[in-house]
Amino acid sequence: MAYYLIMFKTLTQAIQAGRTLERAGITAVAMRPPWGISEGGCAFCVKVLGKSLTQALIVLNSAGIGYGQVYILHKDGRSGEVVM
Image (cartoon, rainbow, N blue to C red; front, top):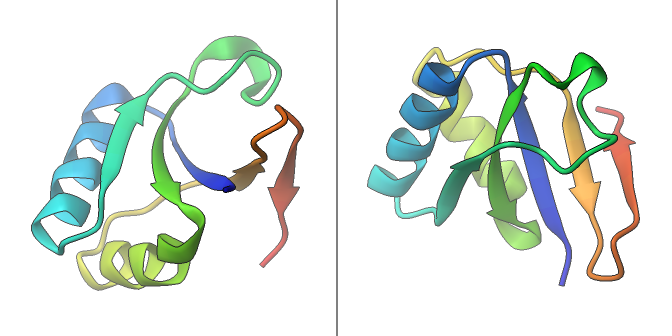
């Protein structure tokens, strides 16, 4: 199963987003992204299941929580930016 990583500039933003998603019933984990995904290493992300991405973005937008890029993280370790 693939996961999606929703990027944030600060840990505080990622934690707030994770809590907001959890309250909406979406399993989310605030974390540092894997090496190579964040440019410069100064980023945090929220990891959500593939089936939850659309709903997660709707919840974040409705709550007024801004986010950066979104990446897909495949089970085999491959990753790539999701263009929306």
